[in-house]
Length: 399
Image (cartoon, rainbow, N blue to C red; front, side, top):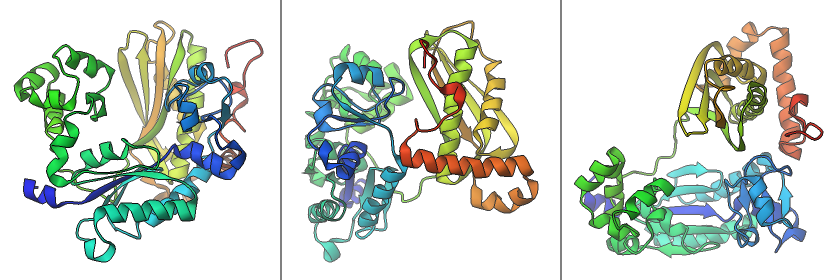
């Protein structure tokens, strides 16, 4: 895509404000003004969302729940209610699609919209963003923040600068001026390790990064350095793509304390198998290849995979396969800090349904009905409402 064509594009990035927590407040107004933390009522797991009141105490998404409880012991800790969040998300996305057919979902709570050429219908991009934000507030009762720019990169960064309920517009010829003073942490792919390495080169802002030669960055970071150089220049030709192919689904967990025993690992794998299978069913997929990821205490990581004879969305089958893969690792010999489980070679359940009617025996059919009944309970009451007995906390022991 030519540079001139990129400059003519008009892209809006919309991001719901503290989405999961905001939905909880929407459903229970008594929570308004309180530090609401969504992710579960136990010390396990991580924070899925935190209200802005909770963020004042240093609570943020992806933070271990135990750390969130230490920082904000008086917070309101709530389980994830994914069915409700999806319901609200559907309402929000229906508003997006009133203004453009080119809507690219990033998550339940954010999306890119390409509104190029829609000025005659709806006005300039800033006006479109304001109208969308207003409709979300009026019809759904929540707030969203928006960024308007000619590239995904700048629109995404802009939407995050004035949260909550923000709107930042960056003119096509002001993109570099907008990016230069921002900290490098605003760029995709710049985590803690990359920031530390760039600091040794005197890089603190995106402008600093842009002034480094591509050769230096490639020598230091390889292909990632080449991408960083382009991002620092504000170069982003990616188009808004309404449909994105899902390659895999799964779950992973980083542990506060390293896992030392195989039995502990098997319990965690069962937990991950239940979550992964539930996600498959939620999205209407079956998975054929099961992959187990193990990260040891020294950050060395390995992956083991097995392809099943036929695709599945049943946690028991996923768990049994993952346990076979566990035997091919050093778990029980080397301490483990992370376990991950995913399913790939996905097929859509509807396309397999006719074959399943003939292939499934009585037990498999019973499992399918039972899984869906359990999903309904989990969607209504949260992930901790029902679980395998072996995952219940042991008296005086590790949960």
